[in-house]
Amino acid sequence: KAGVTQTPRYLIKTRGQQVTLSCSPISGHRSVSWYQQTPGQGLQFLFEYFSETQRNKGNFPGRFSGRQFSNSRSEMNVSTLELGDSALYLCASSTRLAGGTDTQYFGPGTRLTVL
Amino acid sequence: TQLLEQSPQFLSIQEGENLTVYCNSSSVFSSLQWYRQEPGEGPVLLVTVVTGGEVKKLKRLTFQFGDARKDSSLHITAAQPGDTGLYLCAGAPQINDYKLSFGAGTTVTVRA
Image 1: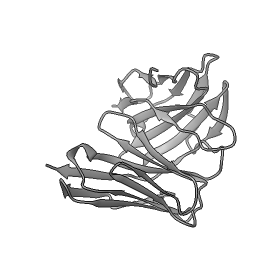
Image 2: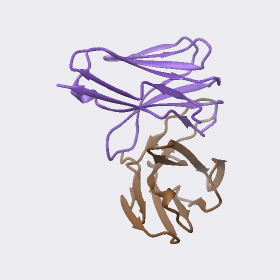
Image 3: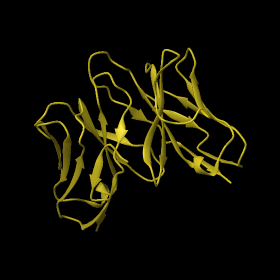
């Protein structure tokens, strides 16, 4: 089975621009979560989508948004980029089984640099 | 402020030595997961513990979940250079909660 794929792997943008990152989950997985990883804050939860609906949201400003398509692929968008948005953005997919814990499989991430 | 506190932040040991990484919180978690992350890659799940007092072994790695489900430890026996990486603990406050809270991580370096 192919793993979680994220595109692009690297991205350089300037302040004020916007960016869209893409995540394709493992086949059969319907839940996609997004995380931001920085040296100072570590891994922080952004949001989770399941069946095209946002099910959970972290404490990030409204400039961070996402969506999920009917094929479970997900995109996240960051508008009006700030220097502090430079980070590794990770996507994780899972089956979201009811009634228990579920394994989240991470992609390799998209390294975003804001200049 | 991290919900999960990991210690130590950095650990450098010689091949063959043992090491322990700790993950502590004042909150109770329904489950706790350990991941290992290598540079340029996403975290890879090592284990999930769900029962207070649970101990799981994965070859040379031993994971323990505290009785009160607030803390966990990862012990590596006879560490090898291939064990080098960033070890992360992550907790789910409730069952069916996919909003994982991560510790800041412990960078482990095993010297040959």
